[in-house]
Image 1 (tube, rainbow, N blue to C red):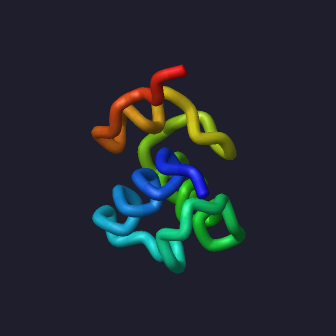
Image 2 (cartoon, rainbow, N blue to C red):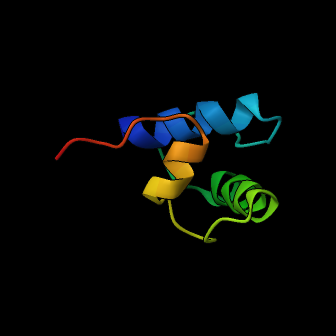
Length: 63
């Protein structure tokens, strides 16, 4: 489980998108919701980028 992915799932859910359960896995529903959000916001599509995290109001993960 990834804490970053859980945070992304929760933020996408707040945007009204269906991510399934917030389980910390980039599954099919989470990826579909992520890509829908990225398209809607004019972001690069397909990866959880720093730009996507910023747009969702989430902090960048620390190394």
